[in-house]
Length: 112
Length: 115
Image (cartoon, rainbow over the protein chains, first blue to last red):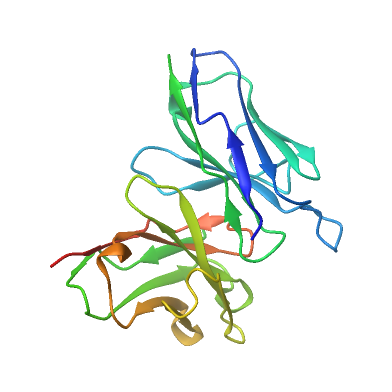
C-alpha cells in the first residue's frame, strides 16, 4: 500500500493568518492515465469528512477559494490563506491512484 | 442533490452478525463506485473496500479482505457492509463514500460491539 505522511500533526493558527499542511507519499501518485489522484478532506468536530480538493488543486463544489492545493509526484500541500473559526478540524490527504486508497494520519488545525 | 443516507447506530455483542446500509439518491447509483471507510474511536480514516453497483465489481483492501462483505442492490440504490461475526475491535464509525475519489460522504453509522 502507498503510505501517506502528513506534517505537522497539529497546527495552532491565529484567526486570519495562513496555515499550511504537507503530505508526502511513499511513491509517485501519477496514474498511468496521466492524472494525479491526490485529494484533501476536512473533518470538523463531530462531522463526517468532506472533500475539499481533488486531483491536487481542484476545489470541490462549494469550497471557499481560501483553500488551495499544490504539488506534484510525491509532495503535496494544502494552504488556507486566512483561517476562519469554521476551519477548525482535522485535515487528511488521500491518494486514489493505487488501490487500496490510503489516507494521511491527519493534521489538527486549531485556533491559538 | 447527491445524498447518501446511512442506517442507524447499532449495538451488538461479539460473535453476532450485522449488515449496515447506504442509500444513494440524486445521482446515477449504478454508474458510480461506492466505498466504505472505517474510523475507529479518536483515530484516522481507513479505506475498507469499494463496489461498482452496475456490475457488482468489488475490491477489498487487504486489511479487510475476508473480514467484511460489501454488496449492493441497484434496484433500490443501496450498498451494504456486513459482518458474519463481530469483534470488539469492529467498534467504529463507518462511512459510505461516493465515487472512486470519494466526493460525497454519508453521515456515518456508529457500530458498537460490546459484551
